[in-house]
Length: 130
Image 1: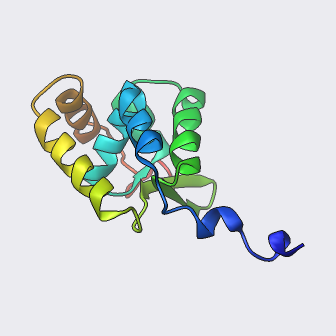
Image 2 (image 1 turned 135 degrees about the vertical axis):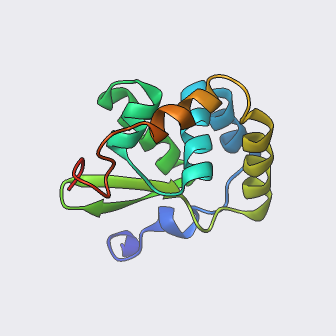
């Protein structure tokens, strides 16, 4: 009865079990998204599409899974959705992600993703998503 008042999934969101966490790492697209968010902070969907060279439906599907797992959160600005790592991610998960990003930053496709993102014209602070 109180489910309509309290979002129960939010209360338990930051209890991330290791299986859920590492399943995100097992998928290359989700790992690439997490790597970009760890290294760049908040990104618009259009930036992720550009950096990963994937379709919007594909990116959105993987972002929805990461959000459902409590690894990322969203912010809407007009018609645009921005994603970032969940600020209440458990310390152990943040540490594993930082170590993974550091270990992979010189390897493909991760270093290429960051370079492609850096070369994106009209990033959201300009006109792309305004």
